[in-house]
Structures are given as C-alpha cells and as structure tokens.
Image (cartoon, rainbow, N blue to C red):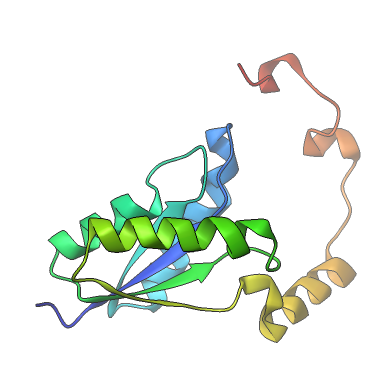
Length: 141
C-alpha cells in the first residue's frame, strides 16, 4: 500500500467541457501544494471521470484512503441526494478505499473571505469581453 492518500475535488460538471478549465487549474494548484496526495477531479454530471471511476483509479494505485472535497457553495440537492448515491457507487467500485468528505467549499469561512475580497477588489470589464453577448463561435453544439 502507498503512504499517499487521494484528494478528490468533486465538482458539478457541464455540457460544455470548457466549464471544467478553472477546476483543472485548481487541481494543478492543489497537486502542487499537496505533494503527499494524488489529486483528482471527479464530476457529478456530464463530464468524466465520475466519482466511481476515480475511486477505481486510486484503488488501482494502492491508495487506501481518499478525502472528497465538494466544490459547491452549499448543501443543496446535489450534496444531500446525489453525493451519497455516488459515494455508494464509489464504495462498490473500490471497496478497499476509505472515504472522508469535507464540508462544501462554499461553507468554509476561508473560501467565503476570499470570495468577499474578490467581489470587493475585482476590476470590472466591459460585458462583451466576458462573452456576455453571444457570439457564433461560442455556440455550444
């Protein structure tokens, strides 16, 4: 067995794969700081890998324990209903892997403080530079 543990950033997912880009960057940042962990993304919906797939991958690497970090603002239906179901599937997929789950990121005072600072200090941009006005090349097939 490896001494490393798994750290799973559990995110929603979207039909547009570009949605996941900030979470992939976050995964890289976390992996660079949590060098004793194997850091992976797991998607609730639409994108892959899902939680069961990540559990199998970690278990196949000899990982015995994994911490799931829900990257959600609060405990809505996805965390009350979907996460427990997906955790059950993950446990079935990797029975030797022990899971712990953190509070949702958005309920952390540290995260809320960072978001408050961002809201106060973020420079504004013209709306058309943010893609607020639809463009043909941004259309989702």
